[in-house]
Amino acid sequence: MGPVRGGLTLTRFRRHLRLPLAGLLLALPVTAQADGVCETERPEWSPADGPMTGLDELFHIATTLPGLGIIGAFTLALLGGRSIYFAVAALFSGIVALGLWYESRIDPTGLHEAARSEGCVGDYTPTVWTLVALCLIALGTFLWFRLRYPPA
Image (tube, rainbow, N blue to C red):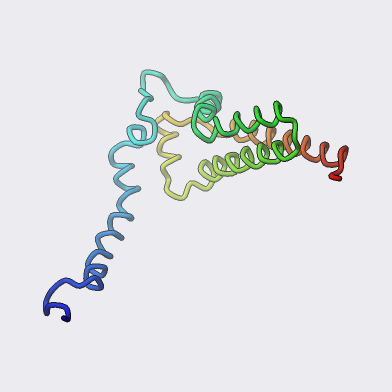
């Protein structure tokens, strides 16, 4: 039994759905800016708190999931004392530092700059440099373990 003439087949459904989905994806960054960046990015922040500083951003990132992952990786590395744990800690902190740098410097959507102008997002520079320092410390410890105790 063939498709009903004039009916909506799967191919036609995909074609009809393509344009609204593309329009929705293009409108998402605009609607986030139109509604107010701080309400979508940092709903817990209020203008009465004052603008966020670099130190505020460092503490904020430390309490998010990537920050807690880095803290956990360093805790495991320091308590476990194996070289692979230091490599994982270096990798985690390097990836988060690179992501924050990309978000603050490249900023393809413009949301970061809009949030900084409203004051709900601070400067990421101290956070990025702290994460780069942690990455280098963990990488140095990893290399020290590998050079001092070569694998048997």
